[in-house]
Length: 332
Image (cartoon, rainbow, N blue to C red; front, side, top):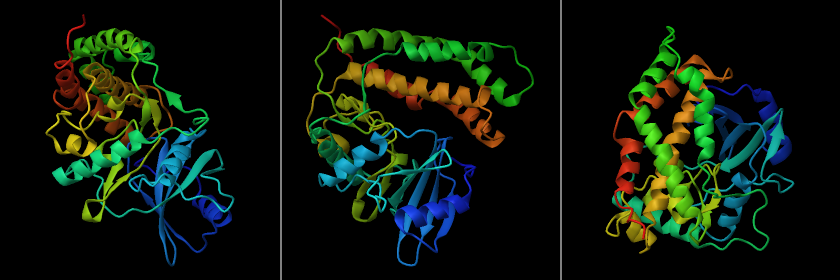
């Protein structure tokens, strides 16, 4: 969130004191991330620095539970919550979930991206995550991939009155509508492709692993000596390994990432599905922000309108999905 959340800072200070025993803290809002329902703060005490995350609404429990489990298994790259004095992984204040993390010093920007050595280290860390067995009893409420793309068609259908309306003088809405009209064929092709691939993937006996499910450079802090720190486990789920190959470029055996990860067969149908899914997810989120949501500022709406246009301009996410599709072997 680029705008400060509505939760009172005094309430956060009381929470830090009561739940984690942290008093006399300096609390600084950090305008980071694209999640319009969450915000982060740097918490500084006399001896330590932490990152405090607040998220509106009910928390998806695996967001905290799974990285805590992975960190306990010895995977140093996983950034897990700091437990409260009652050993809880999060708490709630005034309708906001509140989570405390260690503050990791490093770079998490898209530009510059990861160096070859960092990609290798990330591949090795992700291999550890994917090879970690699920505990007996599993994780309650953890999502499991079902390959059900119809919901994206439904979301777009709900937005159709706004997307297909005539230009009305609202520059942000009109920007989105123009992009929608220019690239409507691409979006429809994505929906058709995903529907066909979903049926194919549901019929396969594909191993499922613990997936971060949003593993991009913005969620990977590069620390000293090329140490990797994976943050933001909001979308963690059980899925095929390809769910975490979205932003690794072409997963060829000679790339640093795959050299670190290890030799595996890539299911190009799954990777293509996930890359098109990401395109649609981002477009829907942007359109909802511009047309539907009343809880975001005009500045955020402007960012989301521009992102909607950028996604469809060529290159980037769309090109990545098309490149993956070119590798899909014919059936039969």
